Image (tube, rainbow, N blue to C red; front, top):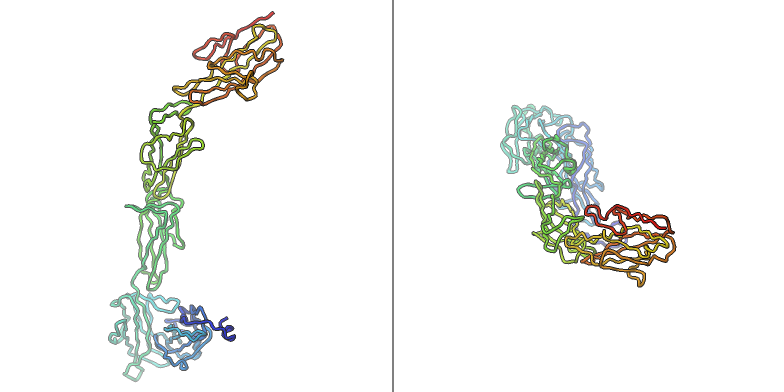
Length: 545
């Protein structure tokens, strides 16, 4: 795209430097020889975000860190990241490269690839070494180094010697007599320069330099515990807490990460691929072990204690005195409420709250700091909702129902019967004496009778009301035979009401009549109160001529 715009004289400023390759794959390695004299290297990672990569400038030689001069015409160029050396002699080769973009910007550093061993002969062998994807050699300082210099580049050599070159310079040249270790070397990049004498000569010739990375250090590991998490003297987690093991290694690289979970039951070492959770384990104390090893076998291991807490606090509400346990719990304005919350062995209680609901009225959630009483919403039914949450967010909510005043209980009794032509039945007495107010100091103050059963109370002429539980009426005297609905509404001292339903039946004259109640009470024309069962259950037989 940049080229097309450039041809059309559309200029896009590009002052950013391109980025050199960061890696490669190759046909040859560092320690094992390859008889193919064509070395192929495929670079990866080079880029330029504006005008794009145009050229790869490169040079092949036998030195590991050659820096090209500014005379670009002295070097080879390629348009693609695939570079070959077609006629490489036996020995170790290195490839040095930098990139240039379409705007002429050049990367300010070089990328060095190699060594690449051509031919069967290898200058040295290292026991326990590791070669990464960039052909870099890693080994421990305890590894044994063996020199092999009998034949190199078609010539016979003897009297091998070596020199170890470190960050601070080269050491003395040592004649090779037997395998040696690198125990005096700490971690870092070193070079082993190998020399030998051509047969028939005493002077030593440099045969090659092999870069060696000494790595005696285990990976750095850490366990990351995500939220939800609460840390005090212990670390508390839930089944939703994510555990991540991180391992880094500046040397040969991390080869393996694993973990194990112990809580009575041991999971054994599990390969670590992704973050993990304590999903199915019960609450309790766990030890999370984790370890990592690098490509040379250096390993590190550590552990972390965590307490798994998936349980909400245990909460309870206590209703103090004065209160009355009846059909429901009846409380007063001064009745105290208290809430207890215990997280037992968990992360501890963070907050406990409550609110009060009465019909359409309610309070906001309030933090529980001690005893409280109900707000003044008036008499009626209340709900006290309460909840508690621990430091991990585990929560539980409950509620209790109470009343400040219970409604009265209406009892219209019946069904009632009247007979045509019976002078004694000119008036019918309706009894509401089974009605009562369950409040401790309750009292019914009004009885209202809806005699025509239309659900409307206090209709003039038709309906009646009394302050006593009985009503005598002749409303039904001249009505035709049939069954008529009757409604009773009672009102207590608190203004609360209740309604009961019954019927009155008008019958033709018969030889005898039996007056009984509809429910659990029996009545006679002159009922008497039975302390245990209401009115006397002995029926009255009335005979007519």
